[in-house]
Image 1 (tube, rainbow, N blue to C red):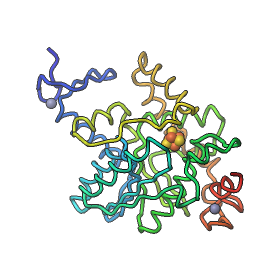
Image 2 (cartoon, protein in one colour):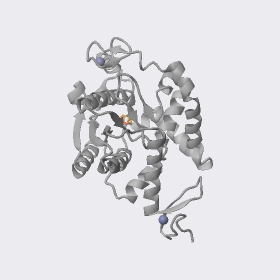
Image 3 (cartoon, rainbow, N blue to C red):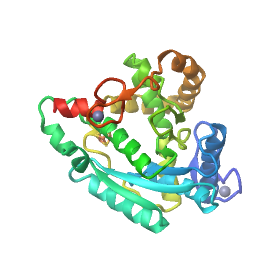
Image 4 (cartoon, helix red, strand yellow):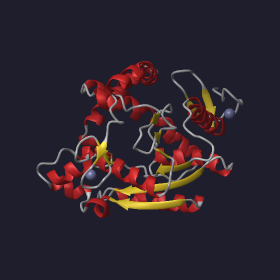
Amino acid sequence: MEVCSKCGNPKIIIKRKQSGQALCNSCFIENIQRKVIKTIKKEKLIDKGDKILVALSGGKDSVAVLDILYTFYEKKIIDLCAVTIDEGIANYRDEGVKIAIDYAKELEIEHEVISFKNSFGLTLDEIMKNPNHRGSCSYCGVFRRWILNKSAKKLRADKIATGHNLDDETQAILMNYLEGNLHNLSKLGPKIESNVFIPKIKPLREVPEYEIGLYGVAKDLNVHRSSCPYANTSFRMEISKMMKKLSETHPTIMYSTLRGFDKIKIAIKNQYDNTNNFSRCKICNEPSSGSLCQVCSFLKEL
Ligand code: SF4
Ligand SMILES: [Zn+2]
Ligand SMILES: [Zn+2]
């Protein structure tokens, strides 16, 4: 009978294909927390006294990132706040927003819910009714970044923590590589810094999506489990399916994609990163590479 590789408990909840390691509930929780803390230390994601804003959607990734960062908050290493973005996606977003509100209340941390409608006058559903739209995820990503950066400045946060996991990061690496978008590729990594945007950190970057889902179950965290109705239409979803398929026969492929990228990222960054060549958007005054930021050019187009 298979038992936990750490403590011998016969009730295992995971057997890792890549290493053969089997873990029980409590050893798995400890293992994930250690792994995330290791990433935080290795990549120097947190400095003592930082105020970290968690982008809290209520999904498994953002709830897990808040759960783990909360241990730093309890030890008074950091201060925490959270922002939840309501994109305006019918029959989907409301549940996540409610979970986020309840979780922030339970942890007694500062929390704000900000909607696309209040910020830009349009919900994502309304944008998608425009026949000339560019695809839901293009707006979603750009609009969310704008809101998070603005909120972080307002809440005086030093960094923005997102729930990006290993699957998200490898998908982004492959998508940008396949599209030949070296500028976007240069902006990937565990910590994204620039002179004008609030730095972004990804503490879960080395944890596979499946294990984050399992962490939520193991810790009995209340998370929003349904997926966005627009997700199926994206290029990212095609890449995600391809990587999942490849992982069945090559269980370490996502790690090797990440490690390979981390080795060449400095060279790409030096050559293609222009995040520090910025001016100010003449409409909203947020950082922008041209006279209008991407949000304001999208809104003009719509
Ligand atoms: S999948 Fe949905 S929530 Fe995610 S970026 Fe696309 S539209 Fe936004
Ligand atoms: Zn164990
Ligand atoms: Zn603007």
